[in-house]
Image (cartoon, rainbow, N blue to C red; front, side):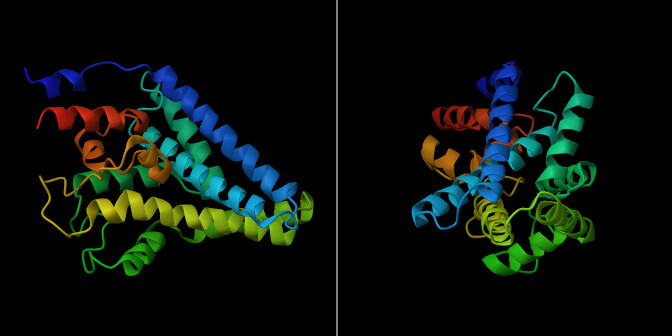
Length: 247
């Protein structure tokens, strides 16, 4: 039996991952509410930029947590709870339907890098912006528009949020996080630049662990994710290190 096979069956402490998920989602919600309802845009610019950057990163983390629920790795012993958490997170995130995204994501794994891959731009697998807009349109439709309009109206007219804060401290970080997710988690990992190592049509970056965490919560270790899709995001560095020591 190979070492790779042994590690793939090694159990992990899912409570640790659940704790990380709680911290990420709670931090995102707290920073988001503070930024929209409390932060003064007349404060020093570095404070505003810092909050935007932090929100962008936490938005990315929230989506990665939701992504783990699609693979059943957030709460592997209780699939129904796993599904409920995924539904709630993605709805709050941007009005996404968890079941729809799950099916699309599993198709991404099944048909990675082909015309059947919903995340891939088979007609233009090189240029960033055409691929990003195709990716954006793939997942952001009328449901998401109506949901976010509803959230915005509640923020503005019920909770009395500042219009400018809503744009600067909510819309901008959310859009920037979509670019961050796409660039580090899809574009760099699946673009057809050099030959891929196998049928997964995915590659990993060689960022140090801290930089990997800051860029996309280790999602840049993407070949490892495709090899072991049921591993949670926080165990991907372990997979990366294990593969490096066995090559």
